[in-house]
Image 1 (cartoon, rainbow over the protein chains, first blue to last red):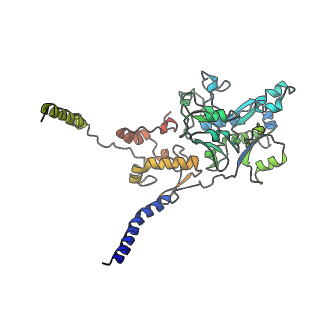
Image 2 (image 1 turned 90 degrees about the horizontal axis):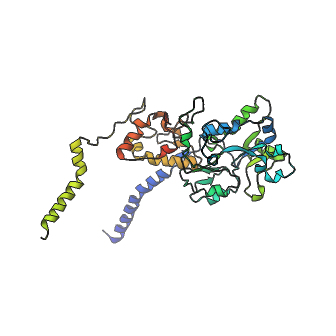
Image 3 (image 1 turned 45 degrees about the vertical axis):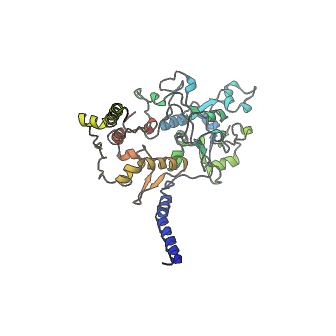
Length: 278
Length: 133
């Protein structure tokens, strides 16, 4: 065999041996996952809370209850039903009510009526455009999804609590105790842990996720659904409106265009996506 | 050879120790038979969402991929090799791909192999198993 043709054949042979791994690689890179059929999509999810409507239903905590039950958030603080915690600072909060002058200290001031100052106002994670919690997370356990939701991958959380320090809204809670002890044994008549949603474990930080797991399969957030149920019999639109901030046709965008909305601590530049009508 | 007795004695002890598990198994009758799994009702024993051989070898990788695509990637549908689409989930039995939709007794399935192989996955620290608290 000539040297030249030997080299040609050898080259062809080498190419052939490379083909098999290449084929496997291509097969492996083929998409095996895709967005769920019927998922709710948005460029930027946002929430509007009309506190005037909340006030009409004074004392209503349906949104919080729906969230806590759906997401297995232990009912840990006074006024709740399940066993009380040894230390109220161990409370886990996804959405909760906070006195008005804590929520909007700059709008409170010395001349505001004391009753108004103490008025409980619904708060939750603001899913900021520029979330400080995401910036500080050393493991990227918390991250911003393409649709604006500040999400947590609890598999990665090492419980360092940097995010809790970074969040200016106190929206993050650390599991100082094993949350499961608050789900069993059950007091008769109390709601059970929701088996469809994971609990957390001791030593991770958690927060509101705008119900990302529901949006991805075509359902609205639990609090928004609960709020709609409260207001449906009254014939008015609910206090909570949820939708795509960047879609001009969405109800949220329409409210943002027409109403006077405020955000918490706008001076910090995190650009929250929970808006309030006061 | 120097110290023949010590060396041979040491070697004998070494051989006994290294083969001890085999002797133990012979003596106690624990032959390490592979665990008998309780298959989900109606299962043909050959087919999960992928083939049994694939699931046996790759389920941990599959679950890892599922976790990343659902939690980090917004992709919640899984395309199986046979063209079926499953909704990625572990425990929410309303979703088509939920493991516990079929494997409703993980103690009779998951745990048996895990115990046999001495694997202790910590999935259950957070994810709830059907019928258990």
